[in-house]
Length: 295
Image (cartoon, rainbow, N blue to C red; front, side, top):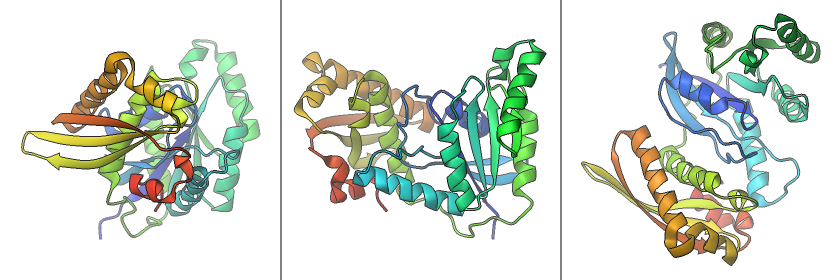
């Protein structure tokens, strides 16, 4: 049986997580969002690094404050992910002085006995100031006794050492999971999340967190993929905002989603979007299961 290792990447918004995933995949697969905790499900990409086959998992952060069914499910899924992966890459921005979020992740990783590597990104911001860089390295090293890599995705510093380090760490043992952990509906979920990502970038306040996308049906033709999707919101005024004046916003969401999907899949897309109000959808078991947020 072919050996496939599972590696999860976590990090707060704007740490460079999506840029790292695109770099390791050697192609555009995901966009960076500056809004906090917008990813809800694991997104998988299969890559080969130094002749080693890897499932690269873009893993969402978890909110410890929210207790709705969606949040509870995300926490449960997060722990299951930690139990099944061979390595966790935890990304940190060098400017981040508050590491409470990272501490909570490391505490969970400790419970599940998950191997962790710290990635400290944006060292280019230190410029030629070696003292500043040493201070940053010292601050991280004093807090965490873990393997750490100081990198810059912008200037490509430390990336060769990182990829070699990833491979060295996972090859010590055979893959933890003998079965393919990628769910059958992964392609559908990834398309839903790309559309939702566009909504997130064009909306503000509570809307990015109160929106869900569900592909009702899709048709794969020889030259085009046709998508019919519903956008769920909690309130009527949220529906009006997403539709926009004379349908301007929903048209923009559809167009940008189509362009992103065509860039990733190298195939033409046709997207039809419908906005529906579903109050308290985050506690709707049936809907969450249909969307793919529940197993």
